[in-house]
Image 1 (cartoon, one colour):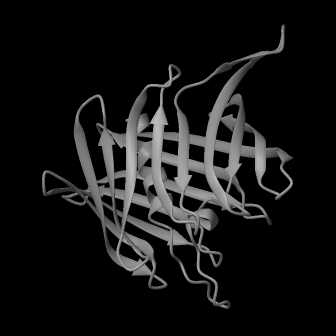
Image 2 (spheres, rainbow, N blue to C red; image 1 turned 30 degrees about the vertical axis):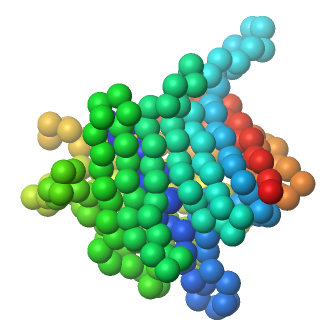
Length: 229
C-alpha cells in the first residue's frame, strides 16, 4: 500500500505539467510542477538514515528519478530499490503539449495502471482522473490546487465511491512543500502519517538539494541531485 501511494502522488505531479498561470502568459511545465528553476534534465531524490554515533548514512527505502525534455515536459519517472533495480515506471502521455494520461508499470508484478484525465482545472491541470487496469475502471482521484498551480489536496476513491486515500499539502513562500498529511483507509481502519520538511541547502539556481524530513516522528536526510541541460 505504501509504495502504491508514493506512486500515486508522483503520478499527479506528472499530470500537472501544462498549467497556464492566472495572471501571466507563462505556462507550467514539469519543471514548475516540481518547483524547479532553470533547464533541468534530471533529478534524483534519495533519503537516508543518519547514524549519530559515527555520522554515517544509510539509504532509506526506494529512491526516485525524473527526466525532463529540453522544454520542461516530464518524460518519465522511475523508482528504484537500494540495489538500483527498477521497480516502478510512470510515463505521461501528451496531446498538443497537454498531458492527457499517465501509465504506471509495476515491474515486479507485471501490472499496468492507466490514469486518464477526465476533467481539468484551469483548462490544464488534472482535476478528476480515472484509473484503469485492463480497460476496467478501478479507482478515481480528485485534486485541488493553489494559485501557483501546485497541488493542495488529493482524494482517491474506489470505483464504488469508497474513500481509499487522502493527502493534504502546505507550502512555504518559495512554494516548497513544508507539511503533508496522508490518510489511508484499509479494512475500515484509518492510518494517518504527518510529515514536515525543512530545507537546508540550495544550489546556484535556488533549487533545494538537501532537506530534513520528519515523517511520522522519524527523521531522515533527503538529498536531491540535479542535472541541467
